[in-house]
Length: 249
Image 1 (cartoon, rainbow, N blue to C red):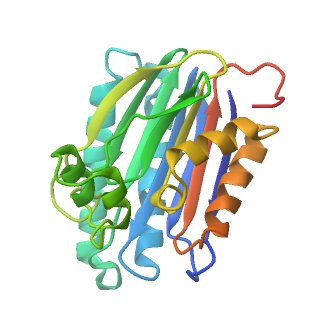
Image 2: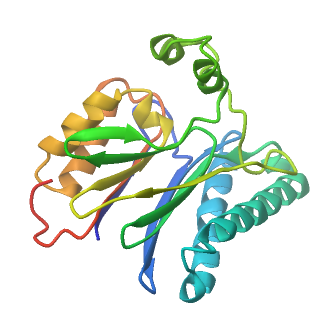
């Protein structure tokens, strides 16, 4: 795998509440992005806890994972993380009300399994096309799916940041779980809404395929979101399958 991970505070906020990681073990890879909420420090805590606990569980389970059990592992792991975060914010008044989105992808060969809570996203880029794999668990996302809002209306809706699901805010959480097949030279992108609120899918696609490398693609995505205002934290993780030369995207 060739990958790059980038996270930036943006041009307005004083601290970064996003977290991101990439890890390989026993033939599997794990990538996670999380966008914390709950005010200064609390959002940082929530996103960092979610990523760290996901990584800890992955390290423990990687030797035993297989494609028959991975979805159940994702479900149980995220449920456990949600419980941990909910308990933590109940026991720490300075973190009361904290929560985080979480989008995670676990892959082995051509099989990639994912879980999504909130409105961070997973994309697949192939044949110079881009497809959003996850569904936004947000108010406007649901209104778009019901046909009550267009995509264009959703982008400027005053309540576009209202989430229907987040880790740590309720005792139970329902994550979106699924799988996607990818092949050599295809690219996965996991990102927070600090990127997608500033860049349309077509712009993301153009930036990635015009970049000289995966690292260059990540840097350009962050810079482009900042050039458009950078009001939010911006995070992007790019993974390309079975690249041999490390050259241009």
